[in-house]
Image 1 (tube, helix red, strand yellow):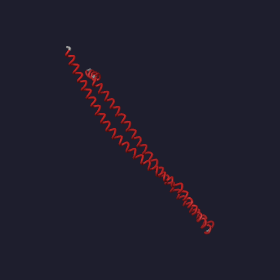
Image 2: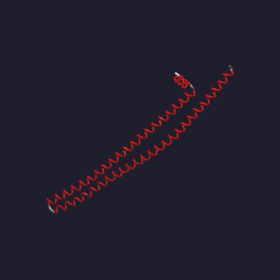
Image 3: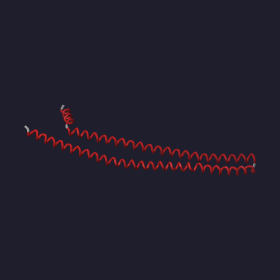
Image 4: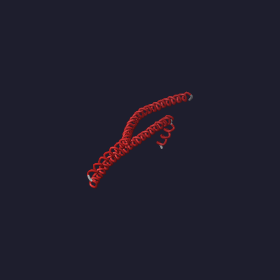
Length: 183
C-alpha cells in the first residue's frame, strides 16, 4: 500500500511529470537514432551484395571468354587436321591462310564490341567501389553527428529538468511562505 501511495505521489508531483515528459522525448530521439542505424546497416548490406553479384558476373564473363577462345582454337585445329587428311597439304595450306584471315577479322570484331563492354564493366566496378566509399564516409559522419547531438540533447534535458526542479522548489517555498503568512 505504501508503494502504491508513493507511486501516486510520484505521478502527481509536477516535477516528476515534467521529468517523465522530457525523458519520453529523449527516448523518442534515441529510438529514431536506432532506426537510422538499422537503415545504415541495410544500405551497407545492399552495397556489399551488389559488389558480390558484380564480381560473380565479371568472373563468369571472364570464364566464358576463356572457354570460347579455347573452343575456337580446338575447332580450328580439328578443321585443319580434317582438311589436311582429306584434301592434302596444298588445300590445307589455303584453308589455313583463310582461317588466319578469318581469325583476324573475328579478333577485330571482338575488339570493337568487347573492349567497350570491358571498359563499361570496369567503370561499373569502380563506380560501385566509389559509391561504397562515399556511403561509408557519410554514415561515419552521421554517426559522429548523432553522438554529438545526443550528448547535447541529454545535457539540455538534464539542464531543463534541473531548472524546472529549482523553479518548482522556489514556487513551493513561496507558496508555503504565503500560506503561512495568512495563518
